Image (cartoon, rainbow, N blue to C red; front, side):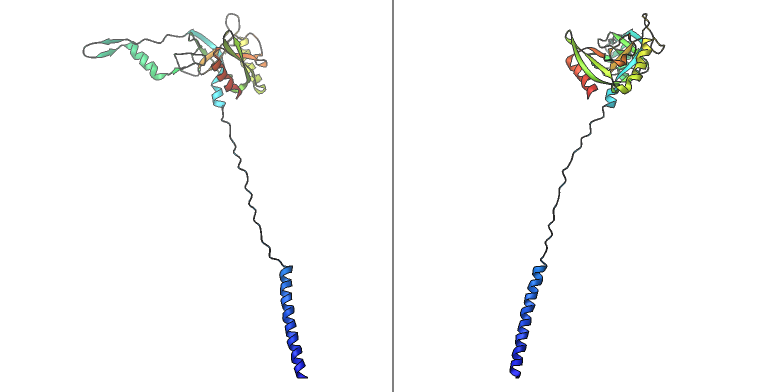
Length: 240
């Protein structure tokens, strides 16, 4: 009777081992190993280019009432007296040298070849041909107030036309109308109308007598007698 019992125990133990092995296999199948997948997203780099601020550059083109017009003085000539001992510079030459120290030559947008920079913000500013020098009053508008510049060709030269931005119409009309009415800030000519100088790069592009009220309400001429390149430079300044 004892021998069968040992056999049963051995069988039972073997069965347990088998069941235990199956059980381990079952656990592995029910709980599979999970592998995490890492996904790296690379954001596209965006480069933002900021347009340069042209405000100051456009402000060099401005409108101001004409307060005086005179003939531009010819540049003084240099003269010297030579002796065996030394070279003496006359007073005329000294004055020329001092003037050159205080001013510098400028190239007008319409081709002024040899003028000097105005001594103050009121001028005098030379006309493009260098014949007249114009003194102006307080500025009432500049290149930041105008837009939509266009070219017009007349007899081989170019003129530039533009209109005033809606938000600047009132302020520019105030300046134009003071000249139209011959206000003391814009002295009238014999016809009773004052003039407005339109200046760029220290050169008077045009200085029309204001014959129409509320000029800023419509398109008007801002430069005449320009080469195509000069006109397109001005066009680019206003429109960009």
